[in-house]
Length: 230
Image 1: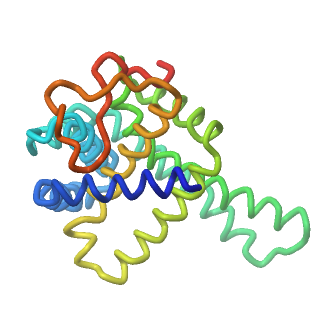
Image 2: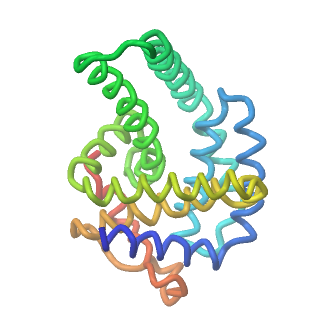
């Protein structure tokens, strides 16, 4: 739990030092997420930008666009799967909303947990995707499953904090337009790097960011980008 809280703190510190770029990227993320079919690609773009900024403070908004474009097809497939998962589970819950009983309640609980785990998994997927030497969406989901199983408390704490951030953003709606998505992407990247380094795959600070420890969190060395199983 403490490790998760410390990693979140480092994520916020990283965001604070690069806020203006994340704000512009967040606006683009909101606009590109309005068509649901492009929402995963927009989230991938934020994660690529965050990955680049963790490695080099000189990264630009071009990283967002590259992440968006290169994942349009993958993102469209994921968006369709998301729609199917939501429709199937929502239909089941609505159909059995008036039913009660031990088995029925258990089944409804399974459907709810399925939704939470499915979308909670996607909080980490793209951050892990960009840590892979040969990125693939299937491989990223596999690595995310391993990440969750190896770090259950770390993951649960992170999911709870994501819910808190989203809830606050809904109450302070301008935050959604200006920062929420970028903040979560920056934190997701920090969390993933934290666990990769905790597993012993850290190789030090890349030359291009050496000495730039303003957020107290060094990025991965190029030689350990594949710290997660391929």
